[in-house]
Every structure is written in structure tokens, then in C-alpha cells.
Image (tube, rainbow, N blue to C red; front, top):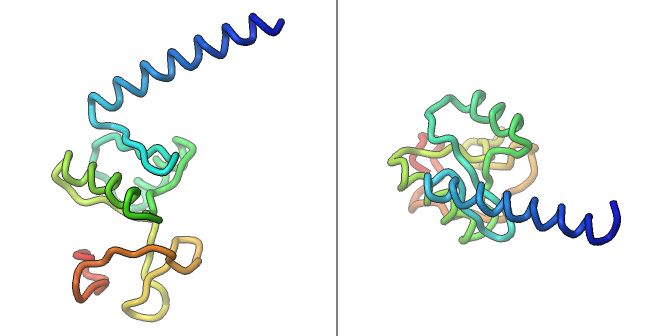
Length: 121
């Protein structure tokens, strides 16, 4: 495409993306933090189904890496009055947690006396 045509196409795409994001925000389906988009379909599912749906959408289960990202996840918990799965699992050492790929956690915001591995972290 010629330079001006390319610019027009980009502006049209930006406009369409902006409108779609607006609709999703109105329906409490997306929020942002730290340049990342956090999204939900608002449906309950088990961990494996949730992980697969995230993968299908080109993402992964949310793993909070900062207070802002933690708040983005909490937004969905409050909006849908439910729990949220995180991209964190218990390691081979009881009471110790890690990222799904085995990497060490760089951010935590556990409740007092947590994590216990009992779902109330």
C-alpha cells in the first residue's frame, strides 16, 4: 500500500480496536495494567479448561507480577463475585509456590498465614 493508504488502514484498525475494547470494558470483560490486557469470558470452568481457553485466545492464565496486575485480577473477582485461577502452582516443597513453568515467583500478595494450598491464598 502507498504511504497514505497504509496510514488510513492503520487509523481504521485503531478505531475498530478502540470500539471493540470499549464494548468489552462496558461488559466488564477486559481491563488493563502495566501494558497488559486482562480478559475473561465470565464463565466458570476448571483449571485445565481455563488454561486451554487462555491459550486459544493467544494468552495465558493471569499471573500477577505487580500490585496493579493483582488489582486487575481482583477487578474480575469482584465484578463476577467469584474466584480466579492464577498461573501459579504449588512446588514439590509443601507451602512453596512457583509459576506454572517452574520459575520462582517475583511478586506475592498472600493473605496472612498463606499460602496454605487450601484455596484461600
